[in-house]
Length: 116
Length: 115
Image (cartoon, chains in turn brown, orange):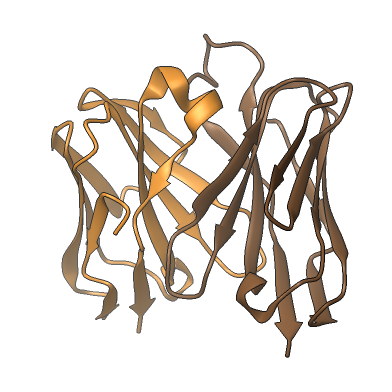
Protein backbone atom coordinates (compact mmCIF):
# COMPACT_ATOMS: atom_id res chain seq x y z
CA UNK A 1 0.00 0.00 0.00
CA UNK A 2 1.35 3.39 -0.97
CA UNK A 3 0.94 5.83 1.90
CA UNK A 4 0.81 9.60 1.68
CA UNK A 5 1.51 11.62 4.81
CA UNK A 6 0.29 15.18 4.95
CA UNK A 7 1.42 17.81 7.40
CA UNK A 8 0.26 19.67 9.27
CA UNK A 9 -3.12 18.07 9.96
CA UNK A 10 -4.58 21.36 11.17
CA UNK A 11 -3.67 24.94 10.34
CA UNK A 12 -5.38 28.02 11.77
CA UNK A 13 -4.06 31.35 10.52
CA UNK A 14 -5.04 34.99 10.09
CA UNK A 15 -5.99 36.52 6.78
CA UNK A 16 -2.90 37.72 4.90
CA UNK A 17 -0.49 35.12 6.27
CA UNK A 18 1.42 32.64 4.12
CA UNK A 19 1.36 28.88 4.65
CA UNK A 20 2.77 25.66 3.28
CA UNK A 21 1.25 22.18 3.35
CA UNK A 22 3.38 19.11 2.72
CA UNK A 23 2.64 15.70 1.23
CA UNK A 24 5.30 13.01 1.61
CA UNK A 25 5.75 9.36 0.74
CA UNK A 26 8.45 6.74 0.47
CA UNK A 27 7.02 5.66 -2.90
CA UNK A 28 7.59 7.14 -6.34
CA UNK A 29 4.49 8.33 -8.17
CA UNK A 30 3.70 9.06 -11.79
CA UNK A 31 1.80 12.17 -10.76
CA UNK A 32 0.44 13.95 -7.72
CA UNK A 33 -2.78 15.88 -7.39
CA UNK A 34 -4.12 18.42 -4.94
CA UNK A 35 -7.82 18.71 -4.13
CA UNK A 36 -9.77 21.15 -1.98
CA UNK A 37 -12.92 20.10 -0.17
CA UNK A 38 -15.35 22.59 1.34
CA UNK A 39 -17.82 21.60 4.07
CA UNK A 40 -20.77 19.66 2.69
CA UNK A 41 -19.14 19.13 -0.70
CA UNK A 42 -16.88 16.63 -2.41
CA UNK A 43 -13.20 17.27 -3.18
CA UNK A 44 -12.46 19.38 -6.25
CA UNK A 45 -9.26 18.95 -8.24
CA UNK A 46 -6.97 22.00 -8.09
CA UNK A 47 -3.89 20.82 -9.98
CA UNK A 48 -1.90 17.84 -11.21
CA UNK A 49 1.91 17.83 -11.20
CA UNK A 50 3.60 15.26 -13.37
CA UNK A 51 7.29 16.05 -13.84
CA UNK A 52 9.88 15.84 -11.03
CA UNK A 53 10.74 19.38 -9.92
CA UNK A 54 7.67 20.83 -11.59
CA UNK A 55 6.17 24.03 -10.19
CA UNK A 56 2.65 25.16 -11.03
CA UNK A 57 0.90 28.35 -9.96
CA UNK A 58 -2.80 28.92 -9.59
CA UNK A 59 -3.30 32.56 -8.56
CA UNK A 60 -2.01 32.70 -4.95
CA UNK A 61 -1.40 28.93 -4.79
CA UNK A 62 1.96 27.42 -5.76
CA UNK A 63 2.36 23.67 -6.14
CA UNK A 64 5.67 21.84 -6.34
CA UNK A 65 6.50 18.21 -7.15
CA UNK A 66 9.72 16.92 -5.60
CA UNK A 67 12.64 16.04 -7.86
CA UNK A 68 12.37 12.38 -6.85
CA UNK A 69 8.57 12.36 -7.38
CA UNK A 70 7.96 11.24 -3.79
CA UNK A 71 6.72 14.47 -2.26
CA UNK A 72 4.87 17.67 -2.98
CA UNK A 73 4.05 20.98 -1.35
CA UNK A 74 1.27 23.52 -1.60
CA UNK A 75 2.10 27.11 -0.70
CA UNK A 76 -0.59 29.77 -0.29
CA UNK A 77 0.42 33.43 -0.31
CA UNK A 78 -1.68 36.00 1.54
CA UNK A 79 -4.35 33.54 2.61
CA UNK A 80 -7.99 34.65 2.51
CA UNK A 81 -11.06 33.32 4.36
CA UNK A 82 -12.22 31.82 1.07
CA UNK A 83 -9.20 29.49 1.17
CA UNK A 84 -10.67 27.73 4.22
CA UNK A 85 -11.23 24.03 3.62
CA UNK A 86 -9.72 20.56 3.63
CA UNK A 87 -6.73 20.15 1.32
CA UNK A 88 -6.01 16.65 0.08
CA UNK A 89 -3.08 15.32 -1.84
CA UNK A 90 -3.56 12.24 -4.01
CA UNK A 91 -1.17 10.17 -6.02
CA UNK A 92 -1.39 7.85 -8.97
CA UNK A 93 0.76 4.74 -9.05
CA UNK A 94 3.88 4.86 -11.17
CA UNK A 95 2.90 1.92 -13.35
CA UNK A 96 -0.22 2.17 -15.51
CA UNK A 97 -1.00 -1.53 -15.20
CA UNK A 98 -1.49 -3.85 -12.28
CA UNK A 99 -3.70 -3.51 -9.24
CA UNK A 100 -3.14 0.24 -8.86
CA UNK A 101 -4.46 1.07 -12.34
CA UNK A 102 -7.00 3.86 -12.39
CA UNK A 103 -6.87 4.44 -8.63
CA UNK A 104 -5.67 7.28 -6.49
CA UNK A 105 -4.24 7.07 -2.98
CA UNK A 106 -5.19 10.00 -0.74
CA UNK A 107 -3.43 11.62 2.20
CA UNK A 108 -5.40 12.23 5.39
CA UNK A 109 -5.76 15.91 4.58
CA UNK A 110 -4.93 19.31 6.07
CA UNK A 111 -7.79 21.32 7.56
CA UNK A 112 -7.07 25.00 6.90
CA UNK A 113 -8.97 27.77 8.67
CA UNK A 114 -8.28 31.36 7.67
CA UNK A 115 -9.70 33.93 10.10
CA UNK A 116 -10.71 37.38 8.85
CA UNK B 1 -22.57 21.24 -10.24
CA UNK B 2 -19.65 18.92 -10.96
CA UNK B 3 -21.39 16.52 -13.34
CA UNK B 4 -21.57 13.84 -10.65
CA UNK B 5 -24.84 13.84 -8.70
CA UNK B 6 -25.39 11.95 -5.48
CA UNK B 7 -28.69 11.39 -3.72
CA UNK B 8 -29.74 11.67 -1.01
CA UNK B 9 -27.46 14.35 0.47
CA UNK B 10 -28.31 13.26 4.01
CA UNK B 11 -29.56 9.93 5.34
CA UNK B 12 -30.39 8.77 8.84
CA UNK B 13 -31.12 5.08 9.19
CA UNK B 14 -31.59 2.54 11.91
CA UNK B 15 -29.40 -0.51 12.15
CA UNK B 16 -32.17 -2.77 10.82
CA UNK B 17 -33.11 -0.58 7.85
CA UNK B 18 -32.30 -1.10 4.18
CA UNK B 19 -31.49 1.94 2.09
CA UNK B 20 -29.66 2.76 -1.13
CA UNK B 21 -27.34 5.56 -2.18
CA UNK B 22 -27.43 6.69 -5.79
CA UNK B 23 -24.76 8.25 -7.98
CA UNK B 24 -25.12 9.47 -11.55
CA UNK B 25 -22.45 10.98 -13.81
CA UNK B 26 -22.99 12.97 -16.99
CA UNK B 27 -19.34 13.24 -18.01
CA UNK B 28 -19.00 10.22 -20.29
CA UNK B 29 -16.50 8.63 -17.92
CA UNK B 30 -15.94 4.89 -17.93
CA UNK B 31 -15.03 4.35 -14.27
CA UNK B 32 -16.95 5.00 -11.06
CA UNK B 33 -15.86 4.70 -7.45
CA UNK B 34 -17.28 4.62 -3.93
CA UNK B 35 -15.18 6.16 -1.16
CA UNK B 36 -15.85 6.42 2.57
CA UNK B 37 -14.70 9.57 4.36
CA UNK B 38 -14.52 9.44 8.17
CA UNK B 39 -13.11 12.02 10.54
CA UNK B 40 -9.33 11.91 10.94
CA UNK B 41 -8.90 9.15 8.36
CA UNK B 42 -7.79 9.27 4.73
CA UNK B 43 -10.40 8.64 2.08
CA UNK B 44 -11.03 4.88 2.01
CA UNK B 45 -11.61 3.28 -1.36
CA UNK B 46 -14.53 0.85 -1.21
CA UNK B 47 -15.38 -0.22 -4.76
CA UNK B 48 -14.24 0.47 -8.31
CA UNK B 49 -16.21 -0.16 -11.47
CA UNK B 50 -14.72 -0.01 -14.97
CA UNK B 51 -17.26 -0.13 -17.79
CA UNK B 52 -19.82 -1.38 -15.22
CA UNK B 53 -17.60 -4.31 -14.23
CA UNK B 54 -16.40 -4.39 -10.64
CA UNK B 55 -12.62 -4.31 -10.57
CA UNK B 56 -12.06 -3.67 -6.86
CA UNK B 57 -13.70 -4.66 -3.61
CA UNK B 58 -11.42 -3.30 -0.93
CA UNK B 59 -12.38 -5.84 1.78
CA UNK B 60 -15.68 -4.08 2.35
CA UNK B 61 -18.18 -5.83 4.68
CA UNK B 62 -21.07 -7.53 2.90
CA UNK B 63 -23.58 -5.15 4.51
CA UNK B 64 -22.45 -2.78 1.72
CA UNK B 65 -23.53 -4.03 -1.70
CA UNK B 66 -22.68 -2.05 -4.85
CA UNK B 67 -24.53 -2.14 -8.13
CA UNK B 68 -23.50 -0.62 -11.44
CA UNK B 69 -26.16 -1.16 -14.13
CA UNK B 70 -24.31 0.99 -16.68
CA UNK B 71 -21.32 3.33 -16.91
CA UNK B 72 -23.38 6.33 -15.78
CA UNK B 73 -25.09 4.98 -12.68
CA UNK B 74 -23.77 3.54 -9.46
CA UNK B 75 -25.65 2.44 -6.37
CA UNK B 76 -24.61 1.44 -2.88
CA UNK B 77 -27.16 -0.74 -1.13
CA UNK B 78 -27.02 -0.66 2.65
CA UNK B 79 -28.45 -3.13 5.15
CA UNK B 80 -27.95 -3.90 8.84
CA UNK B 81 -25.35 -1.19 9.23
CA UNK B 82 -23.45 -0.40 12.41
CA UNK B 83 -23.02 3.02 14.06
CA UNK B 84 -19.34 3.01 13.01
CA UNK B 85 -20.51 3.06 9.39
CA UNK B 86 -21.66 6.65 9.89
CA UNK B 87 -19.58 8.75 7.50
CA UNK B 88 -19.62 10.79 4.30
CA UNK B 89 -19.91 8.47 1.31
CA UNK B 90 -18.42 9.95 -1.83
CA UNK B 91 -18.96 8.83 -5.38
CA UNK B 92 -16.41 9.71 -8.03
CA UNK B 93 -15.97 9.13 -11.73
CA UNK B 94 -13.03 9.23 -14.10
CA UNK B 95 -11.72 8.19 -17.46
CA UNK B 96 -9.69 5.34 -16.01
CA UNK B 97 -6.81 5.58 -18.47
CA UNK B 98 -6.24 9.28 -17.65
CA UNK B 99 -6.66 9.29 -13.86
CA UNK B 100 -3.00 10.18 -13.39
CA UNK B 101 -3.45 13.44 -15.31
CA UNK B 102 -7.08 14.39 -14.85
CA UNK B 103 -7.99 12.79 -11.54
CA UNK B 104 -11.48 12.16 -10.28
CA UNK B 105 -14.66 14.18 -10.39
CA UNK B 106 -16.48 13.78 -7.10
CA UNK B 107 -20.10 14.17 -6.18
CA UNK B 108 -21.15 16.17 -3.13
CA UNK B 109 -21.49 13.05 -1.02
CA UNK B 110 -24.16 11.48 1.15
CA UNK B 111 -23.83 12.16 4.88
CA UNK B 112 -24.94 8.88 6.49
CA UNK B 113 -25.83 8.58 10.15
CA UNK B 114 -26.62 5.14 11.57
CA UNK B 115 -28.61 5.22 14.81
